[in-house]
Image (cartoon, rainbow, N blue to C red; front, side, top):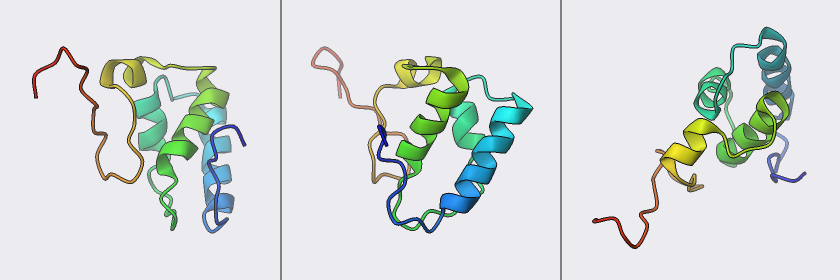
Length: 91
């Protein structure tokens, strides 16, 4: 609920099965790992970023996680992890 991960419910069964498997296998060490290991699920409403955040919080503990902190915020609705530049960074 905290991450607003599940919206329409279309992908919920598959996402939950993948998340449980991911947690049981213990291979995820970063947010990038969670994204990769959860990548086989189709989400109609595009809640991938929120789902990855929720799963990472359960599997890895509260964030920010190493890959998340290094890359900057995830921008929902994009197909790539776009990074928002700070005022001191050139475009």
